[in-house]
Image (cartoon, rainbow, N blue to C red; front, side, top):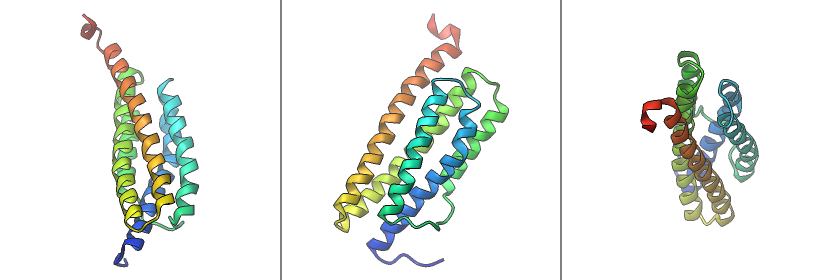
Length: 162
């Protein structure tokens, strides 16, 4: 493994990590979406579409095709897949999946902020703006999923409404 020694190289590493995470999402999120109902499945499908668009954008910014495995996204998606196999279909599964997708979005937001800061540092303003838009989309989706989480949770426990 090579050693990253300058900000430009670190920026490429950031882009590779983000792209690798999105590739995993595009590969695994549709299977997860197929195991939950609407509106959660719709949100996951939308995230998959966004990730598909962002893969190309990240590559254009310098995120090479070859990149190390994205361990955080892989772990989160593996946990979500396990949840689809070990939690009965319905609101409890959907609560767990919302949590998993929100974990992915949160980790991604931190990675996007890092890439944005490095892009600013190396005076890549256009790249920083593109990454900032990705971060804002992720935050918007996280907000929608947060609202969905509370709607699902209130329906999962009838005594909570009393």
